[in-house]
Amino acid sequence: MREILTLAFARSVFVEFISTLIFVFIGLGSALKWPSALPSILQISLAFGLAIGTLVQAFGHISGAHINPAVTIAFFVGNQISFLRTFFYVIAQLAGAIAGAGILYGVTPANTRGNLAINSLNNNTTPGQALVVEIILTFQLAVCIFASTDNRRNGNVGSPALSIGLSVAVGHLVGIYFTGCSMNPARSFGPAVIVRRFSSAHWVFWVGPILGACLAALLYFYILVPYCMNMSDRVAIIKGTYDPGQDPKGESPVQPTWTPRH
Image 1: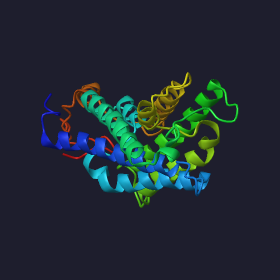
Image 2 (image 1 turned 45 degrees about the horizontal axis):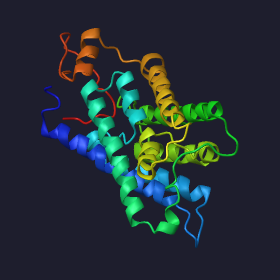
Image 3 (image 1 turned 180 degrees about the vertical axis):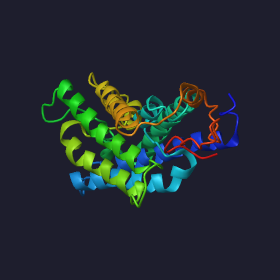
């Protein structure tokens, strides 16, 4: 409980709420079918990507700016954050998505709201096909996040915010044709709650992103670029009691990536 009883933790959870709210508001807003101008695939993709890039730049140093339950769960699977942080982040993200979708619904004219850009299977895509698409698209996003924010990398790796934003945009350029592109359970859950429309394939937008992100975490953190940590340190990370100070050998252990430094 020591981890969550701090002002820094409360700030982090609040930032996950407000950043997901803004992300959902902007992303869904870009996909509304205004009578005067229907949105293009490029417009929607850039809106989602630029929104994520902006929010990561603005809030990454506070909470890590996960803005995505699949990403948060993947960081937990990769032994990068604690169980309690994972739990509270996911709750904040889902609440933020509902709030963002609700605000957008309230400020949008009735003749433009439609289904509030909820995710659905398009172009005769089957649930199985949609699942594979969501797994692959979220996999590439998660790997980009892990690699671009890994503080063990040497040299200039560019801007993580820009890299992550472009990864989201690329996913939408492909995924919109299949599923409207979720890659984020909160993005799918928020508008579905507001318009009260859960399709029989809604599970795809949870299982696909979470599975894709977790597969990326297993590959990156345990096979490609594993952390050399003993079991007690790994358990301490899960419990939220990990001290990134000196270890018994006098060596400074690596810190988990893309998490707030308190």
